[in-house]
Image 1 (tube, one colour):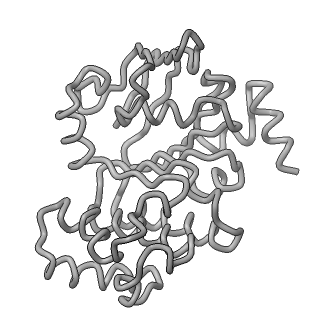
Image 2: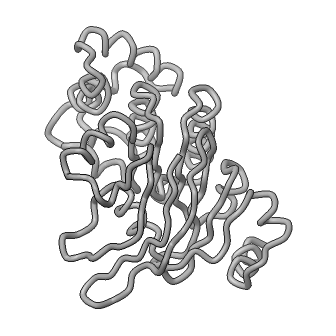
Length: 249
């Protein structure tokens, strides 16, 4: 679906990533894994056209025959609106604390696909119910909901929009172990029920083992290993990957 090739990012003379290459396979969950500061989030920012203005980037991010690094801001916004949905690390930062959830969820989902508010209410009611949330949450402000509930609200929007690609950037880091497990189960469900392609950015190998089909391992701005999860776990080639896997036990 997306092929990242020779992606290098420089900021203020400092190399953030070095010739990064990996593929996000259509219909699969691909995990980009590495320690904090390894360059994962900056790589995702490049894919989404969200790099800081002082960043210099080279290489290509190919999607549907187009290099996303070369298209205009307007074209990029169109791609993101039509095809890509992103869940960030802390869901609370995605919501306006002074606006009730119904209007914000509608903006993220129903309005985005051109549905009326009435149609949105009917569809979102069913989706929230599937995710174990009552309709009452839409009458709350974000600060009245827990981090886990807010993440479920973002997943609900992803179910509603049915994006071609869902990007989840460290989505479980602010959740406790029980909510982490639930969130990953929802991601798997989205992939299996809707066929959604997912890029999951994490530093947690247990999450990778549970959810992902493919993985790319990042260290100090470079991709050091890629492959099917079961292959990399059973036979890691790079020393860094071996250390990561040893750290699980």
